[in-house]
Length: 506
Ligand SMILES: *[C@@H]1O[C@H](CO)[C@@H](O)[C@H](O)[C@H]1NC(C)=O
Ligand SMILES: *[C@@H]1O[C@H](CO)[C@@H](O)[C@H](O)[C@H]1NC(C)=O
Image (cartoon, rainbow, N blue to C red; front, side):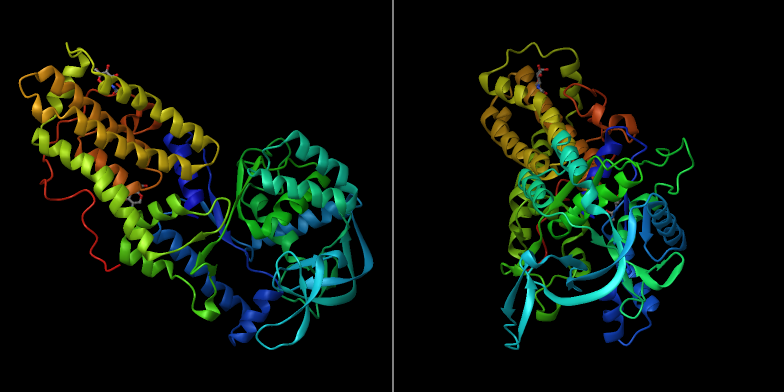
């Protein structure tokens, strides 16, 4: 959610006020049906409870989602039935006896070539598992509905070839092309009601329930206004520019989903960003072993912006990342407290919080020759916004944030070497340094807003940048774009640190 939110807020920063961010909960399927049973709860009540947790989490994490969809919403179920009937109408659905391996936990079917025997380490019981996910599979033999997935092999391969950035990861893309090229079989898209009641019934056949993934994927369309009024398909944002998915659900988003859409001649999403998982003690987080972080507690302990910062900086975009409280503390100290925070603190110290004259001086040129130190720094600072932009536009928010944090270090060095406190007799020289450091703070304050909405705007407030949106958007994040800041009506007491020492134990 944080990754999606940072990208959404980045679009707003760039002035794209139409950016739409959808998140939500996928609530159907055998896994949920079973979990509710185990909890001794009514299935809908169980879903309501879980959904509320995610809605609460979105709120406390300051997520700016425009919609929160639940796949149990009536409008969504209508969209699913309409989608099904359209596939049927076009002849892409047929019934067949299906025999094969099914994993309840993955909600996925696997061909014989993708399962293997294994021993359950806990019980010593012999069982079959999926080679890909290691999850137990069971033999299922039943008559149900199938989707003609195999008919889309060539179209999918052609689509991947023409859209090499469909998945924003070369490894996943390669794997995908191989999977589709090797063995693309038709897909079972329903289950008998005796096995699965918790879902949408197949239109016209009460004995079958729609396969949870066909149902779940359609959520993206529901909130884009599907079924579409002819001529208004793109009105609410379809096709999506980006789906953000965990690495365990790539096949559903990158094979099944485009094929379903192609079957109805609907546009396919432009990009899929695949992320890895957080681990703890290098093992998968798991509730049953207690190897898990409660995000509400973490936000309580460190604050929402620090958690957003940490997740963005360390979040697993390709491999998995290990979650450690020690890293949160260290990253905070290194990059925020002693990095960015220190740049701000020193600027306020050197100028006694009065740095507007240096900004004003910049407007008229300084009458001072740049030193090598100035030149190098100035050139770097002028390029910083476009470097950040390139990363963000490629959905690499992690690299963008890293660039800003390295920037704080660079600015510290520049400040230190320029040592304005040693040139008090050369005011023009001092002004130039003060100005350039101020510009770094202003530019990075603007660019940090998507990551840390509160801290980013607090920094801008503290250095007196107007609250006017035009002074805080991406267009203003440019050297010399604003000469009107630096006058702070009520300067914050210098001991009130922007990033105070953390009051938590490591
Ligand atoms: C630093 O100040 C000088 C003098 O105005 C200016 O030429 C230079 O571009 C500034 N650097 C940046 C990028 O802020
Ligand atoms: C949430 O984000 C908004 C900007 O969208 C910001 O003004 C606000 O302070 C943030 N809230 C918290 C609790 O950080």
